[in-house]
Image 1 (tube, helix red, strand yellow):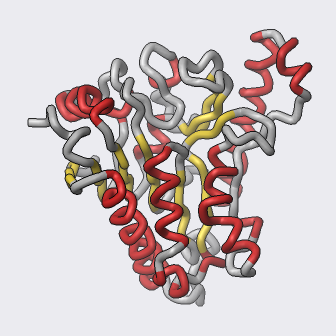
Image 2 (cartoon, helix red, strand yellow):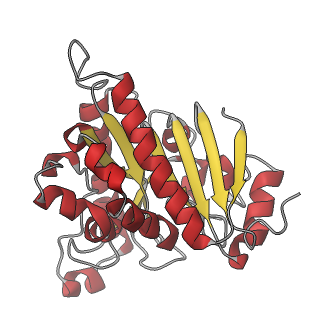
Length: 273
């Protein structure tokens, strides 16, 4: 369990810019420490980053795209995952991966820097709109379980039986949720470290069907950064810092092995003591 470190920046734009710079440096330093491949295994010759959705994260990705340090990174050795995803059509604007692609990743792919196979997307909902509207809860639950199992299999295939991300970037909602782990929903109570991914139905935030990494999976990331801005998140921030592992505020379960950094602005941190 890493000690929580709080960084308060003047505003949302500065939080995003600092996160962008810090992310690129972390990738550069991580790859440099692992050399150019050589005798390293497939797992250690790479750097694995977990992304999320939300305005703070997407703004940071846009800042990364404009940062000159982008040219210094060997993107062929960087892999991207998602802390959570909306189980929507592959071309839906709700998809976190689609937002990240538009903000940053697609340009790397089109420039030939980032292999498409290094982008590990959560399975999408391939049903028609009519099929989605007519689906029962049982059908939705089965599809979510299948999508979660597929993503879990991919994590283990790429990163081993106990997969660990090098860097996980998260956001927090005004209700204290992170990933798609919401207060009052059973998914936050998953404690089995062998369960890496979980399906989420009836999300209180639209769209209702989601897939999320579990709290134990996210907590074993080597470095975890939380980007949280705005007065609407002040109460949740105070509660998260007051008590760890409080199901009423799921973000209190967020953790990292070597580092846990919370980047925020004065409005979101106004109630912190």
